[in-house]
Length: 261
Image (cartoon, rainbow, N blue to C red; front, side, top):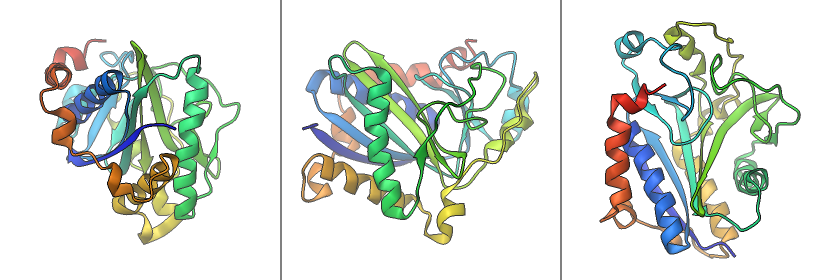
C-alpha cells in the first residue's frame, strides 16, 4: 500500500511550482511517503523541458511582450503553456525494479479513474509518432502512454528519477491555449493540432475544484483512506526547513538556468 499524502497549493508562480515539486521529490526520498499535489499558475507561464534547446527556438522579447512568464522544468519534454489547466504532481520513492513505463502506467490509472468520475472517457495513447525535444510543443502529438480524448492529447506528463525517488507531473487542460506557443517561435516549428480539453467534454462543469476533488478521492481510495482530508498535508509542513526547496527556487528563478540551452 502506497503511503500517500495529499497537497493542494493552488496558484503560484512558475519557479515556486517547480521548486516545490523538486522539494517534494527530496521529501519522498527522505520519508518514504508519496505526495499527490494539485496546483495552478498565477500567470500564463511557458515552461521548457529540461533538455529542450530553447535559445535557438524561442523569442524572449515576444514572450515578455505577451505577458507570459518563463520557467524550465526539472523534467524532460517540450514547451508547454500553463494557463487554464489543473496541474498534478506525484513525488514518490522509486519502486525497486519498476521501469519508468510501468510507473507511468500505474499513475495513469489514478488519472483515468479520476477523469472517469468526472464523466471523461480518456485513454492511453498507443503507437504515437516520436518527436524531437525541440521543433514542436508538448501537445502537438501525444507520446506513448499519455492520455488522450477523442484522439487528441488531454494530459501531458513527464517523469524524472534521482537517487531512489521520482517526480512525475503533468497538465490536465481545462481549455486549450497551446496554439499560442507558435507566436513565440523563431525557428522551424510543427504546428499544434487542437488539444482536447475538459471544457469541451464537460462544459461549465470543468473547473479546478472539480478536478482536484476527483483526483484526491481516487488517491484516497488507493491509500485505503475513508476520508481524503485525513491525508491532507499543508505546504508549510512539506517545505519548512527543506533546503532542497530554497536551492531549487534560486535555480528556477535564474534566467541562466531557463535559457541554458
